[in-house]
Image (cartoon, rainbow over all chains, first blue to last red; front, side):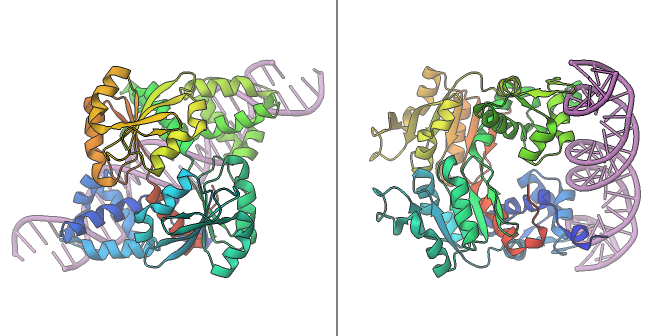
Length: 217
Length: 217
DNA sequence: TAGATTGTTAATCGATTAACAATC
DNA sequence: TAGATTGTTAATCGATTAACAATC
């Protein structure tokens, strides 16, 4: 029997965690310090039963007859998601999308610090975007090693994505956040999270043309 | 028995369609005119059995002993996804993310035409971003009605998202592509597709800290 | 104590995979 | 015809929901 497989928490559970975390953060900001699975269900749209199941994968955070302590659960989920530390990050592709990510304060607040942008266009190399310099992509590998960069973002055109992924992979980066509409191939140990915007738009388009298949959530 | 429910194609199937479509487009560009479910499996990472099941939800596009005709399947999937026509689109929030979407040729090529950007910042109203004007958000409702806009994008900060969603909803927009980190509430008949970038990043962060749970795909 | 709500097991539901007859 | 590969049914697997004892 494969114990790893037995204990592994399924991806469907993990993808719900950020939403719990977000709503708990909102409750916390409102000064609410207690929440039941039923109330979380009303907020998130997931069933109360599912929420209790999900959370119990990581431990018994609740208390019978009471519910969950908002602050504690928020912090626990933050820890589970790895939001209790910071991550050195670089972005390759300094176009609008790269800049959008670089400038977004929400990521910085969550611990994702963009050290540098990279591009191959000489016209933009050297520019400074709200305090973040654009460097030559030729320097990427060295920069990653020298600065212990852990996360690499790809916001280049599709054609360049695999090349950048190769550099990332060889330079020992731990995870790649890929926005290019391509499925990049990397070494086993590198984690890849894709954001395929076209796919999302096409799903929207599908439902626009097939309303009868559309169910909220 | 609810026939609607019986016939409804599940969201998990629909979310795989854009990937099939993308790889078929690549095969087509390479001049390959025939593909088997086994070959599509190697490309996409889904099982051949699943691919055949998925496609058969929409009709028997294949031929025993032969496989699928690349061009025909590509066109059929495009039709299923609604990519055989164009969509009038507006974007509210003319920051980097809004501009990234407005400028991206891939969406235009797929039929999504950005008519206008909108913003509430007087400093940017009137500017022209690669041929797309930034208008005052006060004109949004009228503009949508006058131009029969079908799709509205939200690339504003979180705080404004619900307000924009309300305007969209009241103006008769058919679908909202939401990038704000909030779950907007709209009328039943409006389709909402969310792109929650933080959630994607947090999942990446989870796997970075829990490698043993990471499985490709 | 009585009421509320969790943690957890069992039941159900749905999605994926396996298998193979049909047939090109 | 022989080989290949689909379309489709049945089997398996996994995820969600229901139920309720435990307990705060």
